[in-house]
Length: 589
Image (cartoon, rainbow, N blue to C red; front, side, top):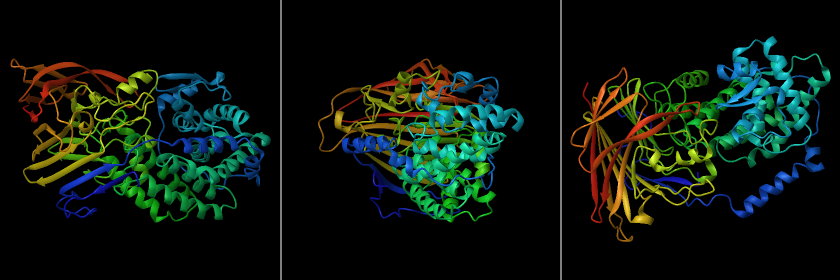
């Protein structure tokens, strides 16, 4: 990747394979840098605009013409279950997406005035999986065919965005083929021919547009669609070679060497594994050997995903994600055919995992993703989450990428802030700026990381420069977890940066958002609290500086639904000579 690189100030190898003693942990210092993020240039935006306009020209239309396929050569299995709730809603007559509803009988693909993510759910035909989860072929086919006819009437002839955007087109090919019985069961030969021709036209469209998709998951999906079409449509030998080469390039540019997706989004990590799994199913149904580069990508991506799994089996709330459902995680991992331990150290992807005695600590140890790679990137560098067995203790609010009925655009922006994460906030500002247009601005560009593992426990020392330009302070967070997992200690330090403006006294808040079901009781001295977990243990929190207050907070589940909860807020001051707040979470019962 050109926009992020890892440097090693000490003579520690860049990559170390997992060993029986250290589980792949690379001890020593790391410096993680992100290049200046200026978004798309004016020239790039103009070029993209002209490219989209070219879709409406006769030249592009001629490029989509070709032989009409008479049938699909096979129907791959889709082993990943959909949402039963969403599927039942479709059978009841409406699409359901993050609490938003769209009646099927009033669906107009010419004027689809829906949240962009909801529109993508429809254009990508993800809903076919949801419908197939709760209905037989006889029950689902009439509904699927009715929606399919509406989509074809609006979009089959002339490509346009977002319907024919490369990632939507790629997902559509995969879901159309995996659930072909639902859309190709009709005895209407004209309709069947139109569907098959549109599949072929979509593949030709992707042949020319896949590399213009955004790097990361969108490009992976586009090339995955090409590879699937090459094996499911007649005469695809040449396309298969072309598609596999493109998919390999998309993987090389879209996944870090440790398997994490470059957007740093757990949602996109899950979808990348899902995408590669669906492509693998095409090879399986055609009885062809899966290319080694796809096997390798899955073997790297699954442990990276599992590195963000808590004791309850669900994902942490990172980079806009909600706490993705454990059943979905299990289903996707099972379908991938990869059996692996959670990755404890992902320097490139940017997450660290400490685990002992049933306690898990997750840490964001990298700069935020650059604006071109993530629509809901968060200013969360240095934040932590903690779980104790099946119970979560400390969380981040999450949900910035899950706009819908419960999360408005304004709330989503608020959930991206540093204050929505369990870390230190200086002068009531974000460690990386959030700009009015929704992109991330200046802030964290360097993160220095030092990790050590011993029998007595784990030690992680992380610092970032997010506040240096504006205030002259470096934020350093030291974390220590005991070997039995019963103590998690921390120190948050603010120190003057060399060769920068002289720091002044500024307010500091140290925030720890509590998971739902955690009830805090403050101590009389205002320096600590007892944290009682429903049906779980009791933990004690103590701070050695500042004053503790308990405030309202929220936590977002996998459906994008916020739940009211509480947060511990330690108020203190940053001093020009440097200042430190020490704190402790200790399991006491």
